[in-house]
Image 1: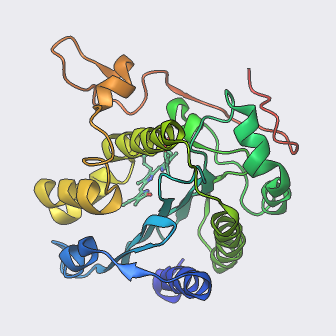
Image 2: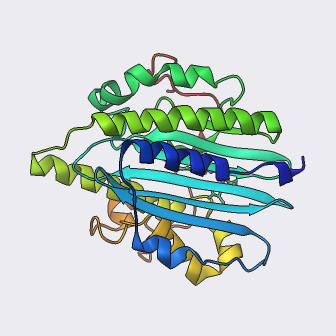
Length: 288
Ligand code: BLA
């Protein structure tokens, strides 16, 4: 399809407006640093914004739009470590033929081993996963390791691009972002410093995973070159990876260690799995 009628700007605008209704966003230094970022192809239009708020450590968005070839949305929001709230994650990669999408409130703690965390945040949100299951169906096998960063309400899809899909995706983005804002509103700050530490480490592990293995990296490298792409990943998209903790990727994910001590470049050690949605509508894990 012709991408020139589609844009992800509306998504970002909506999120900023909604957030400003509830709290006060303050621009972060990383916004200033990356706002005049230019792509090598001289035609992609970029928009990079980043903010914090009293309960929000980092709310940032990168869009890359070139109506000839692709539209990219990478939007995420992280609470301060005093809160164990999920991470808002909206990633979309749209070409004239198809769209690859992950939309989720990524859990801070793996829901398959922390049923209390699942109960606390996802039980009442389960209807959301049903609402979009027809128009944004499960996208098939994915990197197995990614699944522990996904929640039972995750929308993971790869569908033919169309105006309808774009509109449905906007509607889903609206629902999921409002749900996230609601969780942040209700969140009370943890007083137990040892639990704050756990929250901080959980965010750091997530940032470490994505800064090393995000599927968008090869495209960023093409557009910006290796050095700038790395800075964008570590200082903007996954800001905190070099400050929230000191563990390395191999400390968290030792199975990726090669004999010479470096990180295996493969995205998955286990391989791809989960042909179908591994959670039922009650949020129970049903894959073996
Ligand atoms: C593909 N993106 C994918 C896939 C997933 C994600 C699961 C399928 C391939 C796989 O299983 O690895 C997204 N994976 C995620 C997310 C998390 C995760 C959000 O673990 C969070 C924990 N995608 C982007 C951006 C670009 C992009 C910004 O979000 C481009 C700049 C591109 N994603 C992209 C492309 C593919 C893809 C090109 C298909 C090619 C591939 O699989 O490498």
